[in-house]
Length: 208
Length: 208
DNA sequence: TTCATTTTGTGATTAAATTAACAGATTTTT
DNA sequence: AAAAATCTGTTAATTTAATCACAAAATGAA
Image (cartoon, rainbow over all chains, first blue to last red):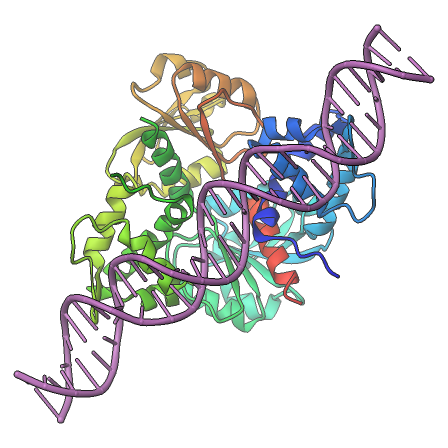
Protein backbone atom coordinates (compact mmCIF):
# COMPACT_ATOMS: atom_id res chain seq x y z
CA UNK A 1 0.00 0.00 0.00
CA UNK A 2 1.98 2.89 -1.31
CA UNK A 3 1.30 6.45 -0.33
CA UNK A 4 0.93 8.69 -3.35
CA UNK A 5 1.88 12.28 -2.71
CA UNK A 6 -0.54 14.66 -4.38
CA UNK A 7 0.61 17.21 -6.90
CA UNK A 8 -0.49 20.12 -4.77
CA UNK A 9 1.41 18.84 -1.76
CA UNK A 10 4.48 18.17 -3.81
CA UNK A 11 4.49 21.69 -5.13
CA UNK A 12 4.60 23.06 -1.59
CA UNK A 13 7.53 20.96 -0.44
CA UNK A 14 10.22 23.24 -1.87
CA UNK A 15 8.65 26.16 -0.01
CA UNK A 16 8.82 24.28 3.27
CA UNK A 17 12.36 23.22 2.65
CA UNK A 18 13.47 26.76 1.95
CA UNK A 19 11.85 28.09 5.09
CA UNK A 20 13.22 25.27 7.20
CA UNK A 21 16.76 25.75 5.96
CA UNK A 22 16.57 29.36 6.97
CA UNK A 23 15.34 28.33 10.41
CA UNK A 24 18.08 25.74 10.79
CA UNK A 25 20.57 28.45 9.91
CA UNK A 26 19.17 30.58 12.70
CA UNK A 27 19.64 27.73 15.13
CA UNK A 28 15.98 26.83 15.49
CA UNK A 29 15.55 23.25 16.67
CA UNK A 30 11.78 22.81 16.64
CA UNK A 31 8.99 24.35 14.66
CA UNK A 32 5.22 24.43 14.93
CA UNK A 33 2.88 24.18 11.98
CA UNK A 34 1.58 27.57 13.04
CA UNK A 35 5.06 29.04 12.76
CA UNK A 36 5.46 27.61 9.30
CA UNK A 37 2.18 29.27 8.47
CA UNK A 38 3.53 32.64 9.61
CA UNK A 39 6.48 32.29 7.30
CA UNK A 40 4.96 30.60 4.27
CA UNK A 41 1.39 31.80 4.35
CA UNK A 42 0.20 28.21 3.88
CA UNK A 43 -2.61 27.19 6.22
CA UNK A 44 -1.36 25.28 9.25
CA UNK A 45 -3.79 22.44 8.77
CA UNK A 46 -2.64 22.06 5.19
CA UNK A 47 0.94 21.98 6.39
CA UNK A 48 0.29 19.25 8.92
CA UNK A 49 -1.52 17.21 6.33
CA UNK A 50 1.36 17.65 3.90
CA UNK A 51 3.95 16.67 6.45
CA UNK A 52 2.26 13.39 7.24
CA UNK A 53 3.52 12.14 3.88
CA UNK A 54 7.04 12.33 5.27
CA UNK A 55 6.46 10.44 8.47
CA UNK A 56 7.16 6.86 7.61
CA UNK A 57 8.31 6.62 11.19
CA UNK A 58 6.28 7.85 14.08
CA UNK A 59 7.33 10.87 16.14
CA UNK A 60 7.49 13.30 13.35
CA UNK A 61 5.52 15.99 15.02
CA UNK A 62 5.09 15.98 18.74
CA UNK A 63 1.91 17.45 20.10
CA UNK A 64 2.71 20.45 22.24
CA UNK A 65 6.20 20.67 20.86
CA UNK A 66 6.14 20.75 17.09
CA UNK A 67 8.41 19.16 14.52
CA UNK A 68 12.14 18.72 14.60
CA UNK A 69 13.57 21.10 12.02
CA UNK A 70 16.32 18.66 11.23
CA UNK A 71 13.98 15.71 10.74
CA UNK A 72 11.78 17.74 8.43
CA UNK A 73 14.72 18.88 6.36
CA UNK A 74 15.93 15.32 6.09
CA UNK A 75 12.51 14.03 5.16
CA UNK A 76 11.88 16.72 2.59
CA UNK A 77 15.34 16.35 1.13
CA UNK A 78 14.77 12.68 0.62
CA UNK A 79 11.40 13.09 -1.02
CA UNK A 80 12.59 15.96 -3.17
CA UNK A 81 15.48 13.95 -4.46
CA UNK A 82 18.17 15.99 -2.82
CA UNK A 83 21.46 14.24 -2.99
CA UNK A 84 20.74 12.61 -6.28
CA UNK A 85 23.66 14.55 -7.67
CA UNK A 86 22.29 14.53 -11.15
CA UNK A 87 24.54 16.29 -13.60
CA UNK A 88 22.90 19.41 -15.00
CA UNK A 89 23.98 21.51 -17.96
CA UNK A 90 23.38 25.17 -18.58
CA UNK A 91 22.81 26.51 -22.06
CA UNK A 92 23.58 30.20 -22.40
CA UNK A 93 26.05 32.09 -20.28
CA UNK A 94 24.77 35.63 -20.66
CA UNK A 95 23.77 37.74 -17.70
CA UNK A 96 21.06 35.37 -16.66
CA UNK A 97 23.10 32.22 -17.16
CA UNK A 98 25.94 33.73 -15.18
CA UNK A 99 23.61 34.65 -12.38
CA UNK A 100 22.30 31.10 -12.19
CA UNK A 101 25.80 29.72 -12.26
CA UNK A 102 27.08 32.13 -9.68
CA UNK A 103 24.42 31.22 -7.25
CA UNK A 104 25.38 27.61 -7.50
CA UNK A 105 23.90 26.12 -4.40
CA UNK A 106 22.94 22.94 -6.13
CA UNK A 107 25.06 20.99 -3.70
CA UNK A 108 22.24 20.51 -1.31
CA UNK A 109 19.48 20.37 -3.80
CA UNK A 110 19.32 18.11 -6.70
CA UNK A 111 22.62 17.92 -8.45
CA UNK A 112 24.95 20.46 -9.91
CA UNK A 113 25.84 22.23 -13.08
CA UNK A 114 28.69 20.28 -14.63
CA UNK A 115 29.02 22.19 -17.87
CA UNK A 116 27.90 25.28 -19.75
CA UNK A 117 27.42 26.07 -23.41
CA UNK A 118 27.33 29.33 -25.27
CA UNK A 119 27.40 30.43 -28.88
CA UNK A 120 30.04 33.06 -28.15
CA UNK A 121 33.54 31.67 -28.71
CA UNK A 122 34.96 34.34 -26.40
CA UNK A 123 33.20 32.77 -23.46
CA UNK A 124 34.91 29.40 -23.82
CA UNK A 125 37.00 28.51 -20.81
CA UNK A 126 35.82 28.45 -17.24
CA UNK A 127 33.33 30.43 -15.17
CA UNK A 128 32.70 30.06 -11.46
CA UNK A 129 34.59 26.80 -11.59
CA UNK A 130 32.52 25.27 -14.37
CA UNK A 131 33.74 24.61 -17.88
CA UNK A 132 32.20 26.65 -20.69
CA UNK A 133 32.06 24.99 -24.11
CA UNK A 134 30.99 26.29 -27.46
CA UNK A 135 27.52 25.16 -28.38
CA UNK A 136 28.90 23.39 -31.44
CA UNK A 137 30.66 21.00 -29.09
CA UNK A 138 27.45 20.03 -27.33
CA UNK A 139 27.38 16.52 -28.75
CA UNK A 140 31.10 15.91 -28.17
CA UNK A 141 31.22 17.05 -24.60
CA UNK A 142 27.77 16.11 -23.37
CA UNK A 143 28.05 14.64 -19.86
CA UNK A 144 26.88 11.05 -19.60
CA UNK A 145 23.63 10.52 -17.69
CA UNK A 146 22.69 14.17 -17.86
CA UNK A 147 18.92 14.47 -17.86
CA UNK A 148 18.33 18.09 -16.93
CA UNK A 149 19.21 21.22 -18.88
CA UNK A 150 18.73 24.84 -17.95
CA UNK A 151 17.88 26.94 -20.96
CA UNK A 152 18.91 30.59 -20.76
CA UNK A 153 19.29 31.57 -24.38
CA UNK A 154 17.34 33.78 -26.74
CA UNK A 155 18.24 32.37 -30.14
CA UNK A 156 18.08 29.03 -31.93
CA UNK A 157 15.84 27.78 -29.22
CA UNK A 158 13.86 25.06 -30.93
CA UNK A 159 16.99 23.76 -32.64
CA UNK A 160 18.83 23.60 -29.33
CA UNK A 161 15.93 21.86 -27.64
CA UNK A 162 15.84 19.26 -30.41
CA UNK A 163 19.53 18.56 -29.98
CA UNK A 164 19.13 18.24 -26.23
CA UNK A 165 16.30 15.76 -26.59
CA UNK A 166 18.35 13.71 -29.04
CA UNK A 167 21.05 13.54 -26.39
CA UNK A 168 18.61 12.14 -23.88
CA UNK A 169 17.64 15.18 -21.84
CA UNK A 170 14.38 14.53 -20.03
CA UNK A 171 13.71 17.85 -18.34
CA UNK A 172 14.22 21.47 -19.29
CA UNK A 173 14.14 24.46 -16.97
CA UNK A 174 13.02 27.19 -19.31
CA UNK A 175 14.09 30.81 -18.87
CA UNK A 176 13.37 31.49 -22.49
CA UNK A 177 10.72 33.95 -23.49
CA UNK A 178 9.72 32.03 -26.58
CA UNK A 179 7.65 28.99 -27.10
CA UNK A 180 9.06 25.66 -28.19
CA UNK A 181 7.69 22.17 -28.45
CA UNK A 182 9.00 19.00 -26.91
CA UNK A 183 8.37 15.35 -27.53
CA UNK A 184 6.01 13.28 -25.46
CA UNK A 185 7.46 12.53 -22.06
CA UNK A 186 9.82 15.47 -21.83
CA UNK A 187 9.09 17.81 -18.93
CA UNK A 188 9.40 21.56 -19.21
CA UNK A 189 9.37 23.85 -16.20
CA UNK A 190 9.03 27.47 -17.22
CA UNK A 191 10.45 30.17 -15.00
CA UNK A 192 8.96 33.38 -16.24
CA UNK A 193 9.67 36.79 -14.79
CA UNK A 194 7.08 38.51 -16.88
CA UNK A 195 4.39 36.08 -15.81
CA UNK A 196 5.42 36.57 -12.19
CA UNK A 197 5.04 40.32 -12.46
CA UNK A 198 1.72 39.93 -14.20
CA UNK A 199 0.34 37.72 -11.50
CA UNK A 200 1.57 40.08 -8.86
CA UNK A 201 0.27 43.24 -10.49
CA UNK A 202 -3.03 41.55 -10.93
CA UNK A 203 -3.36 40.57 -7.31
CA UNK A 204 -2.53 44.07 -6.19
CA UNK A 205 -4.92 45.73 -8.55
CA UNK A 206 -7.76 43.33 -7.91
CA UNK A 207 -7.67 44.30 -4.26
CA UNK A 208 -9.27 47.61 -4.92
CA UNK B 1 -23.65 39.38 -11.48
CA UNK B 2 -19.91 39.43 -11.76
CA UNK B 3 -17.95 36.53 -13.12
CA UNK B 4 -15.18 35.51 -10.76
CA UNK B 5 -12.19 34.02 -12.51
CA UNK B 6 -10.84 31.08 -10.57
CA UNK B 7 -7.27 30.98 -9.36
CA UNK B 8 -6.44 27.98 -11.47
CA UNK B 9 -7.75 29.62 -14.61
CA UNK B 10 -5.93 32.82 -13.83
CA UNK B 11 -2.66 31.00 -13.46
CA UNK B 12 -3.01 29.57 -16.95
CA UNK B 13 -3.65 32.86 -18.68
CA UNK B 14 0.00 33.88 -18.94
CA UNK B 15 0.72 30.55 -20.64
CA UNK B 16 -1.97 31.14 -23.21
CA UNK B 17 -0.81 34.67 -23.82
CA UNK B 18 2.74 33.60 -24.39
CA UNK B 19 1.73 30.89 -26.85
CA UNK B 20 -0.64 33.20 -28.68
CA UNK B 21 1.96 35.93 -29.07
CA UNK B 22 4.25 33.41 -30.68
CA UNK B 23 1.45 32.38 -33.04
CA UNK B 24 0.64 35.97 -33.91
CA UNK B 25 4.29 36.47 -34.70
CA UNK B 26 4.14 33.56 -37.10
CA UNK B 27 1.18 35.15 -38.82
CA UNK B 28 -1.46 32.77 -37.53
CA UNK B 29 -4.91 34.33 -37.63
CA UNK B 30 -7.08 31.67 -36.04
CA UNK B 31 -6.46 28.99 -33.51
CA UNK B 32 -8.35 25.93 -32.28
CA UNK B 33 -8.50 24.86 -28.67
CA UNK B 34 -6.95 21.60 -29.84
CA UNK B 35 -3.99 23.50 -31.29
CA UNK B 36 -3.50 25.33 -28.04
CA UNK B 37 -3.48 21.96 -26.37
CA UNK B 38 -0.68 20.79 -28.66
CA UNK B 39 1.41 23.75 -27.67
CA UNK B 40 0.61 24.17 -23.99
CA UNK B 41 -0.24 20.65 -22.91
CA UNK B 42 -3.40 21.93 -21.25
CA UNK B 43 -6.50 19.89 -22.03
CA UNK B 44 -8.61 21.43 -24.79
CA UNK B 45 -11.79 21.32 -22.79
CA UNK B 46 -10.08 23.13 -19.95
CA UNK B 47 -8.86 25.73 -22.40
CA UNK B 48 -12.30 26.35 -23.81
CA UNK B 49 -13.76 26.71 -20.36
CA UNK B 50 -11.02 29.15 -19.38
CA UNK B 51 -11.51 31.25 -22.47
CA UNK B 52 -15.21 31.72 -21.80
CA UNK B 53 -14.18 34.10 -19.04
CA UNK B 54 -12.87 36.46 -21.69
CA UNK B 55 -15.91 36.51 -23.92
CA UNK B 56 -17.95 39.40 -22.67
CA UNK B 57 -19.09 39.72 -26.26
CA UNK B 58 -20.31 36.79 -28.26
CA UNK B 59 -18.34 35.39 -31.20
CA UNK B 60 -15.23 34.69 -29.31
CA UNK B 61 -14.73 31.24 -30.63
CA UNK B 62 -16.49 30.16 -33.79
CA UNK B 63 -17.45 26.51 -34.06
CA UNK B 64 -15.64 24.90 -36.92
CA UNK B 65 -13.20 27.77 -37.13
CA UNK B 66 -11.64 28.42 -33.75
CA UNK B 67 -10.69 31.64 -32.00
CA UNK B 68 -9.22 34.80 -33.44
CA UNK B 69 -5.66 34.99 -32.22
CA UNK B 70 -5.87 38.75 -32.05
CA UNK B 71 -9.07 38.79 -30.04
CA UNK B 72 -7.66 36.32 -27.57
CA UNK B 73 -4.49 38.34 -27.12
CA UNK B 74 -6.54 41.47 -26.56
CA UNK B 75 -8.84 39.75 -24.11
CA UNK B 76 -6.03 38.17 -22.15
CA UNK B 77 -4.04 41.38 -22.13
CA UNK B 78 -6.95 43.22 -20.65
CA UNK B 79 -7.61 40.66 -17.95
CA UNK B 80 -3.95 40.36 -17.11
CA UNK B 81 -3.60 44.08 -16.70
CA UNK B 82 -1.35 44.64 -19.66
CA UNK B 83 -0.98 48.27 -20.44
CA UNK B 84 -1.34 49.44 -16.89
CA UNK B 85 2.08 51.02 -17.19
CA UNK B 86 2.79 50.81 -13.50
CA UNK B 87 6.22 52.06 -12.58
CA UNK B 88 8.43 49.26 -11.29
CA UNK B 89 11.78 49.47 -9.53
CA UNK B 90 14.59 46.96 -9.48
CA UNK B 91 16.74 46.46 -6.43
CA UNK B 92 20.10 44.92 -7.21
CA UNK B 93 21.92 45.25 -10.50
CA UNK B 94 24.19 42.23 -10.38
CA UNK B 95 24.15 39.54 -13.02
CA UNK B 96 20.56 38.66 -12.35
CA UNK B 97 19.33 42.22 -12.08
CA UNK B 98 21.08 43.10 -15.32
CA UNK B 99 19.51 40.14 -17.05
CA UNK B 100 16.06 41.22 -15.95
CA UNK B 101 16.72 44.78 -17.02
CA UNK B 102 18.19 43.78 -20.35
CA UNK B 103 15.19 41.75 -21.25
CA UNK B 104 12.96 44.71 -20.67
CA UNK B 105 9.86 43.75 -22.55
CA UNK B 106 7.62 45.23 -19.97
CA UNK B 107 6.08 47.48 -22.58
CA UNK B 108 3.45 44.95 -23.43
CA UNK B 109 3.11 43.51 -20.03
CA UNK B 110 2.34 45.44 -16.99
CA UNK B 111 4.50 48.47 -16.70
CA UNK B 112 8.18 49.11 -16.87
CA UNK B 113 11.27 49.45 -14.77
CA UNK B 114 11.77 53.13 -14.14
CA UNK B 115 14.72 52.94 -11.77
CA UNK B 116 17.34 50.63 -10.29
CA UNK B 117 19.19 50.57 -7.00
CA UNK B 118 22.43 48.95 -5.99
CA UNK B 119 24.77 49.13 -3.04
CA UNK B 120 27.79 49.45 -5.30
CA UNK B 121 28.67 53.10 -5.91
CA UNK B 122 30.47 52.11 -9.11
CA UNK B 123 27.22 51.06 -10.68
CA UNK B 124 25.60 54.47 -10.36
CA UNK B 125 24.70 55.96 -13.70
CA UNK B 126 22.63 54.33 -16.39
CA UNK B 127 22.11 50.79 -17.64
CA UNK B 128 20.02 49.72 -20.62
CA UNK B 129 18.48 53.16 -20.59
CA UNK B 130 17.41 53.07 -16.96
CA UNK B 131 18.90 55.16 -14.19
CA UNK B 132 20.86 53.35 -11.49
CA UNK B 133 20.90 54.95 -8.03
CA UNK B 134 22.74 54.06 -4.89
CA UNK B 135 20.54 52.24 -2.44
CA UNK B 136 21.08 55.04 0.09
CA UNK B 137 19.14 57.33 -2.21
CA UNK B 138 16.11 55.05 -2.28
CA UNK B 139 13.93 57.39 -0.26
CA UNK B 140 15.03 60.51 -2.16
CA UNK B 141 14.54 59.16 -5.63
CA UNK B 142 11.62 56.79 -5.14
CA UNK B 143 9.21 57.13 -8.06
CA UNK B 144 5.75 58.31 -7.10
CA UNK B 145 2.99 55.72 -7.36
CA UNK B 146 5.43 52.84 -7.58
CA UNK B 147 3.84 49.75 -6.10
CA UNK B 148 5.97 46.92 -7.43
CA UNK B 149 9.61 46.16 -6.70
CA UNK B 150 11.80 43.41 -8.09
CA UNK B 151 14.23 42.15 -5.51
CA UNK B 152 17.48 40.73 -6.86
CA UNK B 153 19.89 41.22 -3.99
CA UNK B 154 21.61 38.89 -1.55
CA UNK B 155 22.33 41.15 1.40
CA UNK B 156 20.39 43.42 3.75
CA UNK B 157 17.23 41.84 2.49
CA UNK B 158 14.85 42.31 5.39
CA UNK B 159 16.05 45.86 5.92
CA UNK B 160 15.49 46.69 2.27
CA UNK B 161 12.05 45.11 2.30
CA UNK B 162 11.11 47.19 5.34
CA UNK B 163 12.19 50.36 3.59
CA UNK B 164 10.23 49.46 0.49
CA UNK B 165 7.07 48.82 2.47
CA UNK B 166 7.47 52.16 4.24
CA UNK B 167 7.58 53.78 0.81
CA UNK B 168 4.28 52.19 -0.13
CA UNK B 169 5.37 49.19 -2.18
CA UNK B 170 2.54 46.66 -2.33
CA UNK B 171 4.11 43.79 -4.26
CA UNK B 172 7.53 42.23 -4.37
CA UNK B 173 8.88 39.88 -7.02
CA UNK B 174 11.39 37.89 -5.05
CA UNK B 175 14.53 36.46 -6.64
CA UNK B 176 16.18 36.28 -3.27
CA UNK B 177 17.16 32.97 -1.83
CA UNK B 178 16.46 34.00 1.72
CA UNK B 179 13.29 34.30 3.63
CA UNK B 180 11.87 37.61 4.75
CA UNK B 181 8.60 38.71 6.27
CA UNK B 182 6.16 41.30 5.06
CA UNK B 183 3.29 43.12 6.62
CA UNK B 184 -0.30 42.09 6.16
CA UNK B 185 -1.56 42.93 2.72
CA UNK B 186 1.78 42.95 0.93
CA UNK B 187 2.05 40.36 -1.84
CA UNK B 188 5.23 38.43 -2.50
CA UNK B 189 5.79 36.38 -5.63
CA UNK B 190 8.85 34.18 -5.35
CA UNK B 191 10.72 33.18 -8.47
CA UNK B 192 12.97 30.36 -7.46
CA UNK B 193 15.35 28.54 -9.74
CA UNK B 194 16.26 25.93 -7.20
CA UNK B 195 12.64 25.09 -6.55
CA UNK B 196 12.03 24.83 -10.28
CA UNK B 197 14.84 22.34 -10.71
CA UNK B 198 13.64 20.36 -7.74
CA UNK B 199 10.14 20.07 -9.10
CA UNK B 200 11.48 19.06 -12.46
CA UNK B 201 13.92 16.49 -11.15
CA UNK B 202 11.16 15.07 -9.09
CA UNK B 203 8.77 14.66 -11.98
CA UNK B 204 11.42 12.95 -14.04
CA UNK B 205 12.46 10.57 -11.33
CA UNK B 206 8.95 9.71 -10.25
CA UNK B 207 8.26 8.43 -13.74
CA UNK B 208 10.30 5.32 -13.20
C1' DT C 1 -29.82 23.72 -50.60
C1' DT C 2 -28.87 19.87 -47.80
C1' DC C 3 -25.89 16.88 -45.37
C1' DA C 4 -21.73 15.55 -43.16
C1' DT C 5 -18.03 17.39 -40.48
C1' DT C 6 -15.86 20.20 -37.31
C1' DT C 7 -15.52 22.64 -33.18
C1' DT C 8 -17.34 25.54 -29.59
C1' DG C 9 -19.80 26.27 -25.11
C1' DT C 10 -21.92 24.43 -21.09
C1' DG C 11 -24.74 21.54 -17.74
C1' DA C 12 -23.67 17.31 -15.23
C1' DT C 13 -20.27 14.50 -13.13
C1' DT C 14 -16.19 13.13 -11.18
C1' DA C 15 -11.90 14.07 -9.03
C1' DA C 16 -8.73 16.76 -6.22
C1' DA C 17 -7.59 19.93 -2.73
C1' DT C 18 -8.69 22.65 1.21
C1' DT C 19 -10.71 23.58 5.42
C1' DA C 20 -13.15 22.48 9.63
C1' DA C 21 -13.67 19.84 13.66
C1' DC C 22 -12.11 17.25 17.11
C1' DA C 23 -9.91 13.09 19.53
C1' DG C 24 -5.78 11.95 21.56
C1' DA C 25 -0.84 12.84 22.79
C1' DT C 26 2.45 15.77 25.17
C1' DT C 27 3.97 19.38 27.83
C1' DT C 28 3.52 22.87 31.30
C1' DT C 29 1.55 24.77 35.30
C1' DT C 30 -0.16 24.67 39.77
C1' DA D 1 0.35 14.34 40.46
C1' DA D 2 -3.67 16.29 38.65
C1' DA D 3 -5.47 19.86 35.74
C1' DA D 4 -4.99 23.07 32.07
C1' DA D 5 -3.07 24.32 27.87
C1' DT D 6 -0.92 23.12 23.45
C1' DC D 7 -0.51 20.86 19.20
C1' DT D 8 -0.62 17.08 16.17
C1' DG D 9 -2.94 13.71 13.10
C1' DT D 10 -7.04 12.28 10.87
C1' DT D 11 -11.88 11.80 9.53
C1' DA D 12 -15.54 14.21 7.56
C1' DA D 13 -17.47 18.22 5.17
C1' DT D 14 -16.82 21.69 1.86
C1' DT D 15 -14.96 24.01 -1.76
C1' DT D 16 -12.56 24.24 -6.00
C1' DA D 17 -11.02 22.39 -10.31
C1' DA D 18 -10.97 19.09 -14.17
C1' DT D 19 -13.35 16.13 -17.23
C1' DC D 20 -17.14 14.15 -19.69
C1' DA D 21 -20.75 14.21 -22.84
C1' DC D 22 -23.48 16.35 -25.93
C1' DA D 23 -26.45 20.16 -27.98
C1' DA D 24 -26.03 23.98 -30.94
C1' DA D 25 -23.40 26.75 -34.30
C1' DA D 26 -20.55 27.29 -38.24
C1' DT D 27 -18.26 25.56 -42.17
C1' DG D 28 -17.57 23.24 -46.48
C1' DA D 29 -18.73 19.79 -49.83
C1' DA D 30 -22.12 17.55 -52.82
